[in-house]
Image 1 (tube, helix red, strand yellow):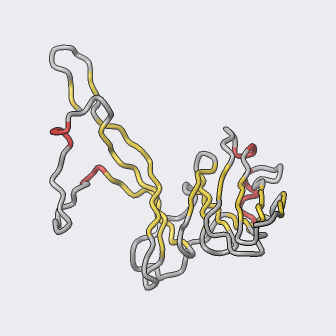
Image 2 (image 1 turned 45 degrees about the vertical axis):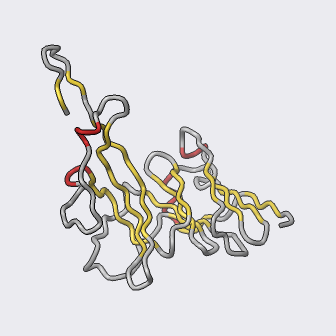
Image 3 (image 1 turned 90 degrees about the horizontal axis):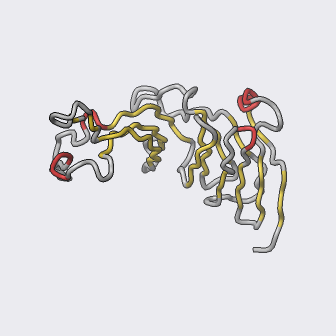
Length: 189
């Protein structure tokens, strides 16, 4: 941050943002889901010369330095095709398969890059019920409380499934494994 000279006021030039990154691998390494905090320049406050860094694909210098911090690393079972925020601390992910996964990123153990084997992390809940592959369609209602949110997903067979993860109970029900759909819509494709 920088200070305005003579004004006594502080002008912050950067702010912290949270981002979710899915890393696909070649199969010998596990796929990962990363929650990171990144320090970014504020719009209309920061000059380009204050934040510009020389970037090179061959550079060994850590370009991000302390501006990028990994908060959570999940070894994900399969490719992450879609990810949607769910409540304040959760994310729902979609693979090429029939299941969706719910992760509480505050409660997931931080997995190191190496040394812990290739066994995927355990999701807090598995949303099941698709009869066909469901590779991409995913959406989450944007309620202010996790009890108000629904998850919807479509599959290759033309079905759309809707889950209410809490099923009218507290969020502790998320940790009991598989969640069946609340509603199944069948249509032509």
